[in-house]
Length: 166
Image (cartoon, rainbow, N blue to C red):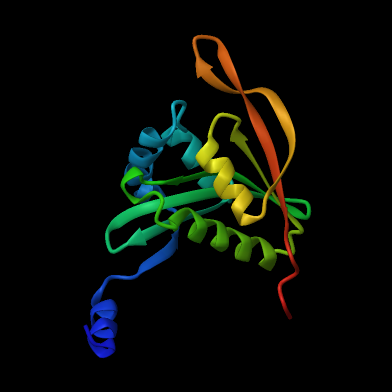
């Protein structure tokens, strides 16, 4: 295929884009959430986050929700509370797109650090975060409920944010 044809084909493909999460998105968000986590957030948890003004973004490809994140701004830091990519869209770079969007947003608010917790047993997520530049800096014992009174440890990870160029 010639370069002009390849460019024309690429231009005809729908582009992925970020949009602020709204209550209208929650059916699609919850579908991904429930397929992604053994202890998923509830609709109420997402609504409370939206009403509290947390930064929540959805990544869309046309009318298909690829993934989302929810983050809380603190003093000189942003705490990533939830990030998920739809199972059919994993391992295609979409989680990295969401992380890059979060970093840009955090830099615009003069945050110096990005923090998160990840299940100790979630090797794919830990690998993704390490490759993105996060460092494992601690362990929260028994942080995540896994059912039947059991809990799983969380690995605390952080990323120092470079200052956005002026």
